[in-house]
Image (cartoon, rainbow, N blue to C red; front, side, top):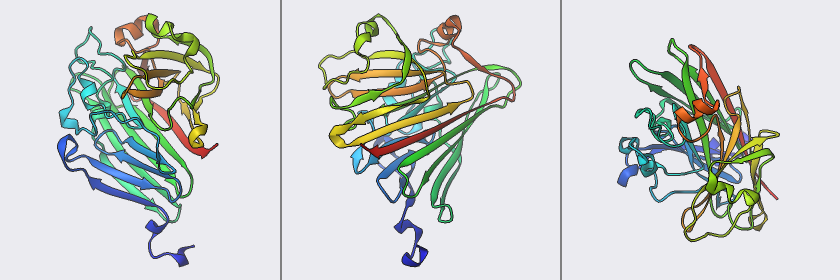
Length: 322
């Protein structure tokens, strides 16, 4: 095949750049095209998270009104996290807290700090020999007299294969056992999400987060058109297998996410948010409940990482035609 081309970028590409303008100014990003139907953007200054993902030139992600926000604008007070929550296909939450801010400890901010952490040692490798793009980097979450955690992330995409592999290795660099909380906030948006879509979650048990969500328990998997005045609902699913996704025959698209975890991610959170303009379904593997660390400790869902210990989480995100 190489006899036909002058440069590997004729067949697949990874392009690094720095954003300009507004609150996105200065954010490092990497665009990947797999040479077939998949194009996605990785935000290096936002935990190497996935922002836009397009399959067959159609959007798969939910993008919030904030747009991309540089980490220096991060606000850890109350619900200030939402002011820099760009949505995107994946926002990583943790490593010390997920869900609401914990009122028992003012350092445990909403959904944690990791999503607003820039990557160190960014490496973007375009390998013609392997026909693959690999992006890697390190995010650190540490504080004097507190937790000292490192997360190494690797994202890989092979030429011609409409799938993304993502691997995280989280290590406790400290000398004490500490709490760890993680949630992978996958955000599905229009046109993949619409009233013609089908949510695919192999749940053997489903629990509503609160009394409001309980009202919609019988139709947790029903996708409605945008609703005025919608109030979000969240559900905890226990899975028979670690694969979930969404099908939409109206655009002939199937999306599946499968994952492996070393005992850290033991539930799938479903964020059912079908409001006008705020139209998104979150499919979110998580380590504990969402109402603060004190509540997670009380209900037994809080996880811990030993001194020198590691957790490994691996995801495969696949797109195909129905």
